[in-house]
Amino acid sequence: FFLTPKVGFHSTQYQLQQQAPGVPDHISRDVPLFSIDSGMVFERPLQWFSQEFTQTLEPRAYYLRVPARDQSQIPIFDTSIADFNFAQIFSENYYVGGDRVSDANQLTVAATSRIIDTASGEELLRGALGQRFYFADQTVTLPGVAPRTTHVADLIAALSGRINRELSVDTGVQYNNQDRQVERL
Image (cartoon, rainbow, N blue to C red; front, side, top):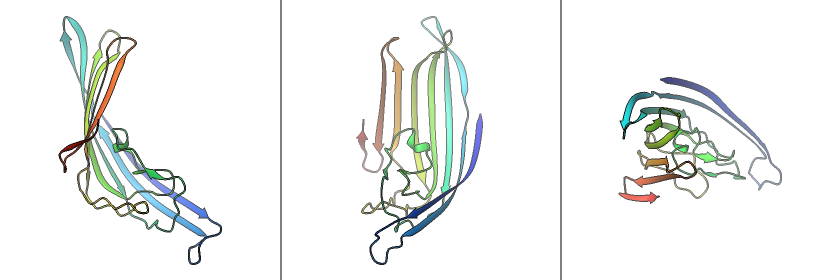
Protein backbone atom coordinates (compact mmCIF):
# COMPACT_ATOMS: atom_id res chain seq x y z
CA PHE A 1 0.00 0.00 0.00
CA PHE A 2 0.99 3.62 -0.27
CA LEU A 3 -0.13 6.87 1.32
CA THR A 4 1.39 10.08 -0.06
CA PRO A 5 0.33 13.39 1.51
CA LYS A 6 1.45 16.58 -0.21
CA VAL A 7 1.37 20.22 0.78
CA GLY A 8 2.41 22.75 -1.84
CA PHE A 9 2.35 26.43 -2.66
CA HIS A 10 2.00 27.85 -6.16
CA SER A 11 3.27 31.45 -6.41
CA THR A 12 3.27 33.41 -9.66
CA GLN A 13 4.29 36.98 -10.50
CA TYR A 14 3.41 38.82 -13.72
CA GLN A 15 5.13 42.03 -14.81
CA LEU A 16 3.20 43.21 -17.87
CA GLN A 17 3.61 46.11 -20.26
CA GLN A 18 1.15 48.13 -22.31
CA GLN A 19 -1.89 47.11 -20.28
CA ALA A 20 -5.27 48.68 -21.00
CA PRO A 21 -6.22 51.58 -18.71
CA GLY A 22 -7.37 50.29 -15.33
CA VAL A 23 -5.67 46.90 -15.75
CA PRO A 24 -2.68 46.41 -13.42
CA ASP A 25 0.77 45.77 -14.86
CA HIS A 26 1.96 43.83 -11.81
CA ILE A 27 -0.16 40.82 -10.82
CA SER A 28 0.67 38.13 -8.30
CA ARG A 29 -1.07 34.92 -7.35
CA ASP A 30 -0.42 32.69 -4.33
CA VAL A 31 -2.30 29.39 -4.13
CA PRO A 32 -1.75 26.70 -1.49
CA LEU A 33 -2.64 23.09 -2.24
CA PHE A 34 -3.09 19.89 -0.32
CA SER A 35 -3.45 16.38 -1.67
CA ILE A 36 -3.36 12.86 -0.37
CA ASP A 37 -2.85 9.93 -2.73
CA SER A 38 -3.46 6.41 -1.49
CA GLY A 39 -3.68 2.95 -2.93
CA MET A 40 -3.16 -0.75 -2.42
CA VAL A 41 -1.94 -3.61 -4.59
CA PHE A 42 -3.45 -7.05 -4.15
CA GLU A 43 -1.96 -10.00 -6.04
CA ARG A 44 -3.16 -13.53 -6.63
CA PRO A 45 -1.85 -16.42 -8.71
CA LEU A 46 -3.76 -17.26 -11.85
CA GLN A 47 -3.42 -20.25 -14.14
CA TRP A 48 -4.69 -20.25 -17.71
CA PHE A 49 -3.98 -23.02 -20.23
CA SER A 50 -1.39 -24.42 -17.79
CA GLN A 51 0.57 -21.15 -17.80
CA GLU A 52 1.25 -19.23 -14.57
CA PHE A 53 0.19 -15.59 -14.25
CA THR A 54 -0.25 -13.04 -11.49
CA GLN A 55 -3.42 -10.97 -11.38
CA THR A 56 -3.47 -7.69 -9.49
CA LEU A 57 -6.24 -5.50 -8.16
CA GLU A 58 -5.10 -1.94 -7.44
CA PRO A 59 -7.65 0.42 -5.88
CA ARG A 60 -6.58 4.05 -5.61
CA ALA A 61 -8.06 7.19 -4.01
CA TYR A 62 -6.76 10.73 -4.55
CA TYR A 63 -8.12 13.75 -2.66
CA LEU A 64 -7.18 17.26 -3.80
CA ARG A 65 -7.95 20.59 -2.12
CA VAL A 66 -6.95 23.89 -3.75
CA PRO A 67 -8.76 27.06 -2.58
CA ALA A 68 -10.13 29.44 -5.20
CA ARG A 69 -8.19 32.59 -6.01
CA ASP A 70 -9.43 35.38 -8.29
CA GLN A 71 -7.31 35.08 -11.44
CA SER A 72 -9.52 37.08 -13.80
CA GLN A 73 -6.92 39.86 -14.19
CA ILE A 74 -4.24 37.40 -15.35
CA PRO A 75 -4.04 37.22 -19.15
CA ILE A 76 -4.01 33.88 -20.94
CA PHE A 77 -0.66 33.33 -22.65
CA ASP A 78 -0.29 29.55 -22.92
CA THR A 79 -3.06 27.94 -20.88
CA SER A 80 -5.82 25.59 -21.98
CA ILE A 81 -8.01 22.90 -20.45
CA ALA A 82 -6.12 19.64 -19.95
CA ASP A 83 -7.24 16.60 -21.90
CA PHE A 84 -9.55 14.51 -19.72
CA ASN A 85 -8.00 11.07 -19.51
CA PHE A 86 -6.88 8.47 -17.01
CA ALA A 87 -3.61 10.23 -16.15
CA GLN A 88 -5.23 13.66 -15.83
CA ILE A 89 -7.82 12.61 -13.25
CA PHE A 90 -4.93 12.29 -10.76
CA SER A 91 -3.36 15.67 -11.55
CA GLU A 92 -3.24 18.82 -9.41
CA ASN A 93 -4.43 21.25 -12.06
CA TYR A 94 -7.37 21.16 -14.46
CA TYR A 95 -5.34 23.39 -16.79
CA VAL A 96 -2.17 23.00 -18.83
CA GLY A 97 0.04 26.10 -18.73
CA GLY A 98 0.82 28.59 -16.01
CA ASP A 99 -1.92 31.20 -16.35
CA ARG A 100 -4.58 29.41 -14.31
CA VAL A 101 -4.43 27.26 -11.19
CA SER A 102 -7.76 25.52 -10.80
CA ASP A 103 -9.63 25.47 -7.54
CA ALA A 104 -10.45 21.98 -6.29
CA ASN A 105 -12.24 20.11 -3.58
CA GLN A 106 -12.47 16.67 -5.16
CA LEU A 107 -11.94 12.96 -4.76
CA THR A 108 -10.82 10.65 -7.54
CA VAL A 109 -11.32 6.91 -7.16
CA ALA A 110 -10.07 4.25 -9.53
CA ALA A 111 -9.23 0.59 -9.78
CA THR A 112 -6.71 -1.10 -12.05
CA SER A 113 -6.25 -4.80 -12.68
CA ARG A 114 -3.27 -6.35 -14.47
CA ILE A 115 -2.40 -9.79 -15.77
CA ILE A 116 1.36 -10.39 -15.52
CA ASP A 117 3.34 -13.32 -16.90
CA THR A 118 4.88 -14.82 -13.77
CA ALA A 119 7.94 -16.22 -15.58
CA SER A 120 8.96 -13.06 -17.45
CA GLY A 121 7.33 -10.30 -15.34
CA GLU A 122 5.81 -8.89 -18.54
CA GLU A 123 2.45 -7.16 -18.27
CA LEU A 124 0.07 -8.81 -20.75
CA LEU A 125 -3.22 -7.08 -20.00
CA ARG A 126 -4.33 -4.03 -18.00
CA GLY A 127 -7.81 -2.69 -17.34
CA ALA A 128 -8.67 0.44 -15.39
CA LEU A 129 -11.80 2.30 -14.36
CA GLY A 130 -11.93 5.69 -12.63
CA GLN A 131 -14.11 8.65 -11.78
CA ARG A 132 -13.77 12.04 -10.08
CA PHE A 133 -16.26 13.47 -7.59
CA TYR A 134 -16.49 17.22 -6.90
CA PHE A 135 -17.56 18.60 -3.51
CA ALA A 136 -17.89 22.22 -4.74
CA ASP A 137 -18.67 24.07 -7.96
CA GLN A 138 -15.77 25.34 -10.05
CA THR A 139 -14.95 29.06 -9.76
CA VAL A 140 -11.63 29.47 -11.63
CA THR A 141 -12.19 29.35 -15.40
CA LEU A 142 -10.75 30.53 -18.68
CA PRO A 143 -12.38 33.57 -20.32
CA GLY A 144 -15.57 32.56 -22.10
CA VAL A 145 -15.73 29.10 -20.48
CA ALA A 146 -18.65 28.39 -18.17
CA PRO A 147 -17.72 26.97 -14.75
CA ARG A 148 -18.45 23.32 -14.02
CA THR A 149 -21.46 22.86 -11.76
CA THR A 150 -21.85 19.08 -11.92
CA HIS A 151 -20.59 17.03 -9.01
CA VAL A 152 -19.56 13.88 -10.89
CA ALA A 153 -17.07 13.79 -13.77
CA ASP A 154 -17.32 11.47 -16.73
CA LEU A 155 -16.38 7.85 -16.16
CA ILE A 156 -12.99 6.93 -17.60
CA ALA A 157 -12.06 3.37 -18.60
CA ALA A 158 -8.91 2.03 -20.25
CA LEU A 159 -7.83 -1.35 -21.58
CA SER A 160 -4.41 -2.24 -22.93
CA GLY A 161 -2.66 -5.46 -23.75
CA ARG A 162 -0.05 -7.26 -25.78
CA ILE A 163 -1.17 -9.18 -28.83
CA ASN A 164 2.33 -10.51 -29.45
CA ARG A 165 5.93 -9.32 -28.81
CA GLU A 166 5.74 -6.61 -31.50
CA LEU A 167 2.11 -5.56 -31.31
CA SER A 168 -0.01 -4.16 -28.50
CA VAL A 169 -3.35 -2.42 -28.24
CA ASP A 170 -4.30 0.52 -26.02
CA THR A 171 -7.83 1.90 -25.84
CA GLY A 172 -9.83 4.19 -23.64
CA VAL A 173 -13.38 5.44 -23.29
CA GLN A 174 -14.92 8.50 -21.66
CA TYR A 175 -18.56 8.00 -20.74
CA ASN A 176 -20.83 10.91 -19.80
CA ASN A 177 -23.12 9.70 -16.99
CA GLN A 178 -25.41 12.71 -17.15
CA ASP A 179 -26.14 12.50 -20.90
CA ARG A 180 -25.73 8.70 -20.96
CA GLN A 181 -23.43 8.75 -23.98
CA VAL A 182 -19.85 8.01 -24.94
CA GLU A 183 -17.91 11.27 -25.25
CA ARG A 184 -14.71 9.74 -26.63
CA LEU A 185 -13.44 6.33 -27.61
